[in-house]
Image (spheres, rainbow, N blue to C red):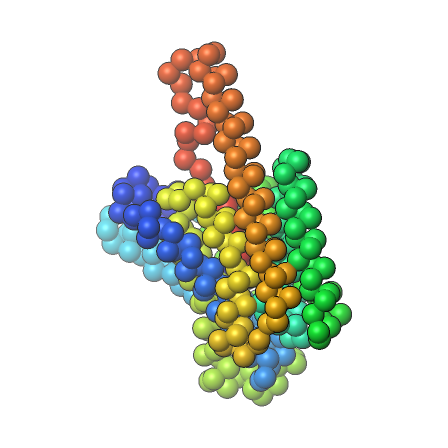
Length: 343
């Protein structure tokens, strides 16, 4: 899931980017991820899914590191200080390793899944991971409705005329579990690392981990110019472009709106699968997709409403205790604290 010299957007940058442009950036991030996934599946005709995943990780890491180096060089030419990189302490490494494992595992298992099941259905099932985290963490009564609606969506997938491949379903459930882990583990990891560092490290981790089997089973097609060029495109669309657009959106639109826009991913994936892979979904598939998208957006709105209510309550208590002191909610947060889809 680019060079970002500072992990926090400045007030000046906030003024330069309008709310409308930030919304378009968030939507562009979703579109980029799903186009990257469709292009990645298109590689399966020439290389196996593991090799395609390795190409995606490798090229994404190369581009991210290159952009980071270019950005640091431009900062120095302009006479601006380059933010120091965090130290490699034992605590920092141990916090990043599970995060990288979850993100790399999510991408790898996703590629293994879409080899046998349609892209739109795969993304729909995968979204059960973050949806489960949102519902379990909120404990609101309304969330029972969203959980039930998601369950209806899953049940509808069982009514499709052509049964889903069990192997593909198993892999996409692994991807959903890894996505849930990526969300929860990210809370700890971001105490020690900026979001750009984590995404880059996860791509490097995936590239190193999958290098052996990817090269061994890639065959002669792996080193052809067409496959390498497509691998570069997959890396850019799947990681570089989405993360760059996410950083434009973070801090300029509300986290709730960002998450709702991210919830459109199953629908975008279905359209990308149709346009780029000729995958046509049936009526029950679209109904299932609609149920999951609605459940995800509804859980996000419910959670945001509770957070705002709790924030107003805490702020009221603090204002009675200490006058003229800024509340924790007024402080700038890490724009990478959101949970975008870095598939």
